[in-house]
Length: 338
Image (cartoon, rainbow, N blue to C red; front, side):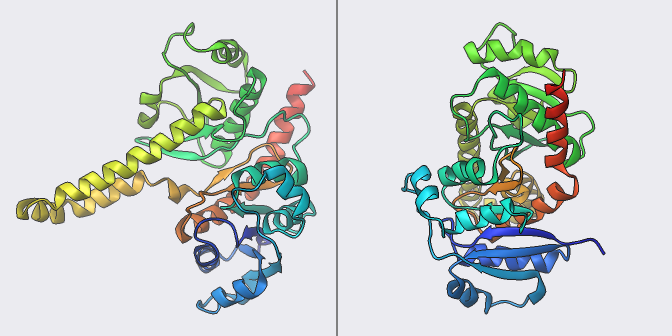
């Protein structure tokens, strides 16, 4: 039997901690036998939550951490001063190889700082990007960066493209991922200074399948498998995507309840509608990995419920099994030797 993938989970991070975080961990071990979850946080609080559930006891353990990093705190100061926080303790488990991955819905800033300072970057990686999967009509697109590097350089975007291609090929099973750069037009001469500088560099990359510029309106159609951009634009795309999806869902539900006829019609189309809406539910794909680190760190939404936590934990299994970090390291090393 294969050795279990050890995933440390920040039980104290996020708007719905610890209840939904612990439930997500329980759901993960009840669904998968190949994962061992390490819940990091205030032990008596975690134990109280676990008492509500039935689960294989050998697949969940608790590592005590007495402190919690709050969202409003300075990330650098918090990582430096709160040595016994759930984020710092969890990341140190990854650094010491006591865990294969770390999942948190906590402070984004602290996770980004801790990932680079505590876990460390793979040698040759200039900037690790946050890379969520976003749903499209053709499946999913990997968006990177969505929050880690607001002021990126062209060399960073080229590395994002390489790492994203490896992820989509080996985790999502796409043999030749199509890479696009987010732009305001399809023409090569369009874009700001960063896009214009990056475009020819991506064209020259022999290890990616670059298809050119992608406009934001075409992203939901799934025109590319990997979409590269700096984090300012990427975060706007992601948040607008989520906001429009939530608004449309709300409006559809409201429209179906306006009359008796619409209610009857709603009952008839409910199975098909539910299936369609599920395909555009980003939470089913887990969180956003911080690519390019020596160990796996996954950031989930601050408002994550149990289902997203569970999917983020399961996401780590495939990441580990496919040796994504090792492949990124090999790719970057090979490029540096040229």
